[in-house]
Image (cartoon, rainbow, N blue to C red; front, side, top):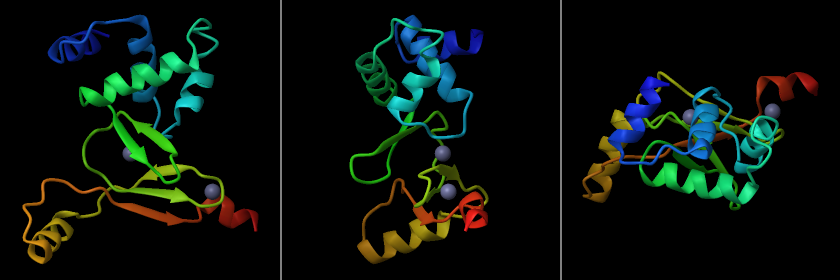
Length: 138
Ligand SMILES: [Zn+2]
Ligand SMILES: [Zn+2]
């Protein structure tokens, strides 16, 4: 919690119960939940928090850079409290989103830079596939 307080202070964010609840939940999961999933997960503990508040809170957290918003297509947004650049993979059957670590994006960024003559600052890499659970179900 101390950590959270100093993080919020750093970003000049007022520490509201809603922001703490949403951020703490996102920190506790690697499931990349949608706003609805976050709402459902914390609803028992915060019964007065509406889905609209969850959306608003997420927007603020994304704006200050505490949370990463992932657009996984068709206006389907997922949220990640891990804001380091890392590739994601989504299962096309069950919709779950996982992180992929130990994948070197340096070369990809360099290649993109060479091909585009841009200075590449960051990249978002998505893979789509079928997860092991869904594979086993067939
Ligand atoms: Zn799956
Ligand atoms: Zn992630």
